[in-house]
Image (cartoon, helix red, strand yellow):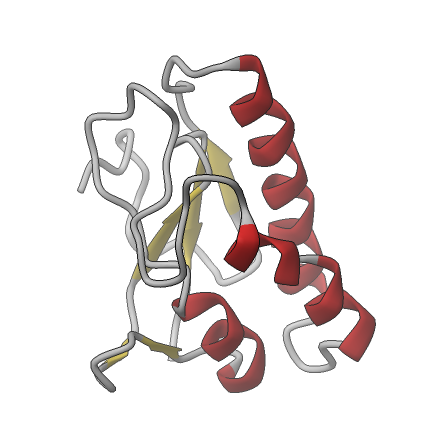
Length: 121
């Protein structure tokens, strides 16, 4: 995955914005909202509120994106984390569990490649 030249030792609260992938206007709205939710998760890692989880549960029913499918802008050339990981990100805080049950302690690339978020143990 590309890191846009970002130091991999960034602290957990660091968010780095890279170049946007080209996408449809509806993708831009979707991506902007995800970006805001990333900010929420960064700020409230130790105290994620139930309403924040509900706020982005819409991702699982987003048009043309079934649960478990890869998310990204229309012309994004990189695969991003699967939708099923979102609930695990909230409940496990600094751990990311994929739908195969594996736990990841690594980068999470969200939305249309414009947000790079480094998670630490």
